[in-house]
Length: 126
Image 1: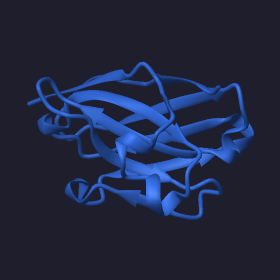
Image 2: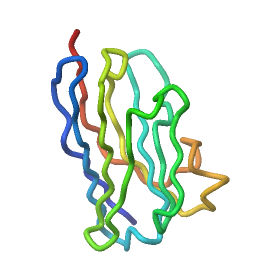
Image 3: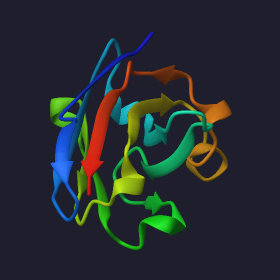
Image 4: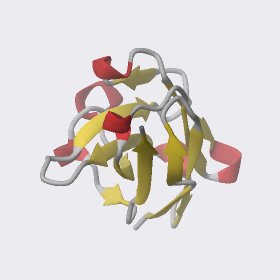
């Protein structure tokens, strides 16, 4: 079993930045595909970003338009999401996820993720 814990959420004005962190425990994070998803009230959880085991491949939701960057530090068992130029529509609970599947077949799909954190709230004011 892997345990995930997010941190770094908060309240920020439009145009500002936040960096979210996800600390993994229970198994080496280097064996896991790591992803970030978000869920706004009344909406389904949606894909934001993912990173492969080694960090050699990253993918993002098309709607982000280059504003977010995912990275991982396997030695620290931590994955990050740097969020820049935040918009009110980015407001959501952000969840860290991990899965043991093949990256190309799993990274975008909430149903493929085996482990989830509890989420951290990001609120962007206008």
